[in-house]
Length: 520
Image (cartoon, rainbow, N blue to C red):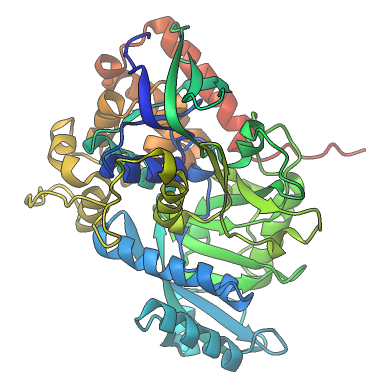
């Protein structure tokens, strides 16, 4: 089939290359199963590259009474902090308490105490107001009476997916992006029959193979593969949007947790990759799921209001926005309609004779979700041997000495994001930083050569985040990228022109500001 050959049969075939699918692929391969993962677009193209980047224990879910979700989340968060520093890092969070606001410092302190009990470690800490204002200069002080501090974690969600996929491949799994499932069929006791179509340019081809278990890990698209009626259950796509502004315009060194003045929803303002991120919204997404989601003017106004309320003198407006992103949460709901923020984030799994569909859940608990999926599929995977629950998920980075031209924080990030591939990444290209970023040119060379880059947006929006942190989606950098990566990408002049045109159009449509409404 095109430039690679697939086996005629697999124990597990996973549809969906986000964090859930990657987790299932890693756990299945580790359990000795012949495993194939396919993704119709790029790895992490959907929700798993557009989250709020937080690997958190679900403090708000604890307050809502979702105890099991919180318990699993804090344990998985700590597992990743221990096993993948630099990929998942601790972040300090601060919640100011204003006169008349809810919750007050005493009640919130009790919730944090319970949160620590679940985590088995003290994450909360005392903060005085003077200290807080050093971390959050310009924060509104009128009515401010106290502040609470605690710790959670932050990641680059797309790089987390790529790292888990690399772990899966190291254990024998096959993973392919731009490979779309066009048909899933089953008759009587026969294995599932799955037809695949190559989506890469100039590679039109189809192949049909079989699998004992098919895992539908397509997130917001999961409804499309369900074969039976599920009564009241269905996927409710909820959109969460974010904006990125220069750090100098909003210099926060911790994650600020605040209640939005309009609806009291939690909003975060936090540092990420040398910039400041503001998010998120939470509303029903009614657009076509096959199109790139984008922030709306209403959401942009909502996020500006949050900043204006917290930092009255900042005067953040459209001219400050470097980029935006919007992600779709695949929340499982029932006929009873609730406010989007009140919907449960628990995952749900359905088994239809070996077609195992999973939806819902959180970035933090992907490993737990993956193991639950395989337990459901176990009757058809008789030779499966799940690893012990405490087996490390990530292999360690090699004990290399930091090159003098690489900064300490960059070195930590490289070790976490690339793990055992670190030495190869360092040899892939120049170790100098790309202007305006913390990325090395070597990382782009490595990605172009080894990380299944098919389109320019794969490279600039997911393998790296240059398209999110540099002006105009890194437009000024494109000629140099073309010159440097000509050998690895092997695109003709026409290919390059087509890719640049495609990328800039996509960036303006989905990662830029929404069009302002016309003045009557």
